[in-house]
Amino acid sequence: MPATASKTVSYKELGFVNTREMFRDAMKGGYAVPAYNFNNMEQLQAILTACVRSRSPVILQLSKGARDYANATLLRWMGRGAMEMIKEFKEGPVPVALHLDHGDTVELCKSCIDNGFSSVMIDASHHPYEKNVEITREVVEYAHKYDVTVEGELGVLAGIEDEVSHEHSNYTDPAQVEDFVKKTGVDSLAISIGTSHGAFKFKVKPGESAPPLRFDILEQCEKRIPGFPIVLHGASSVLNEYIDMINKYGGKMENAVGVSAEQLRRAAKSAVCKINIDSDGRLVMTAVIRKVFAEKPTEFDPRKYLGPAREELIKMYMDKNANVLGSAGRIK
Ligand code: G3H
Ligand code: 13P
Ligand code: ZN
Image (cartoon, rainbow, N blue to C red; front, side, top):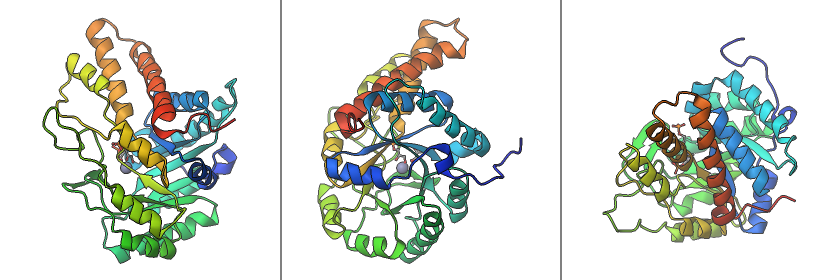
């Protein structure tokens, strides 16, 4: 088998859908579609199982790092396998999109489009505005030829984006959104309103709560591009339950803090149609695996620690769909 994918495959052959209809329905229904990242089989199984059981549409996200980690060719076949597996669920299938998260070059986006992705993000938000427009438009022109949807970004989140570390958020300027959407032709727009990537989102003292998101910026954006799908990155809640478990079983994650479920529920009811969650999945896996290792030091069968981690992931994703994003029960 070659190390890189060599033959073009359309997402339609694999059974994925693009995000167009998903976002139309989410906008109408006042909920957000979950966009969960995965890097391995157990995460993929958990996301699909949770979303099928919840009757929720889902966006499976792969970052450049995940693609490098798992191998593009293998991922193509995993994608095909996942869509075959989903047919076996007694509940029946749900719409699934395969999305490139934080694509940093036109070439990477094109490669994903040629390899079964139904949606790509081109994140050129750290470039000057005109350059961001130019790069994003180039991706849109290619993607739309294949009916692949494109997410662009305006504003930069604090944390890590594209291996560039940003100390501070650069909030989206609402005055730019209309021009950006018009000039690029993107299908959705990620904005920066105070969320950030990772498990240490805000610097708060013990007992203090995280600063609220800038809903004023979100509302101004919505006014400029009414009915247009908006995306929130960096939306993990960094659930205390798992942070406590990690710390209890030998980890060291003091001062980890995320976005509250209440803030996310409010966002999901607005034009925010896609909410990105990666860190919460990482925390669940780490917490469960640490617990198994601490309680059963002789255990060395990966199925005995990855299996329980997968079960806990299913629980966490189902809870997000039902109680945070509002996407549960939307697919009959
Ligand atoms: O927003 C970034 C995602 O959490 C992906 O992270 O690049 O480490 O896979 P990664
Ligand atoms: P979190 O780190 O908050 O999970 O954000 C994930 C994300 O934005 C993926 O693009
Ligand atoms: Zn992100």
